[in-house]
Length: 102
Image (tube, rainbow, N blue to C red; front, side):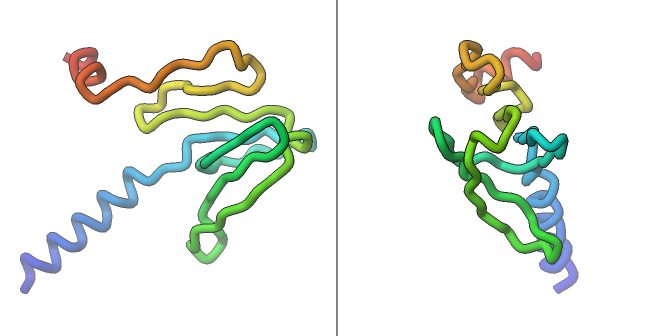
């Protein structure tokens, strides 16, 4: 029973470590918000974040209210920067990332 509880706790803590919010929105008012950006187009941006009570909250905001936003992948590599949209990199595969680390 103890082994089962330890494994469940380990699984839960690993999930918390890997569920970071590394995308960032910079508002015109000066506020900065870390979140996960799900989708965006010319007018709207859909993102999610953890609310005050730990619940996952999904929200949609007009891009015109933002100064800029950046999107990173799970390896913390820049994928998209709204200030410089010409720099749009393709996400690397796991094998490419593993060969770089060696």
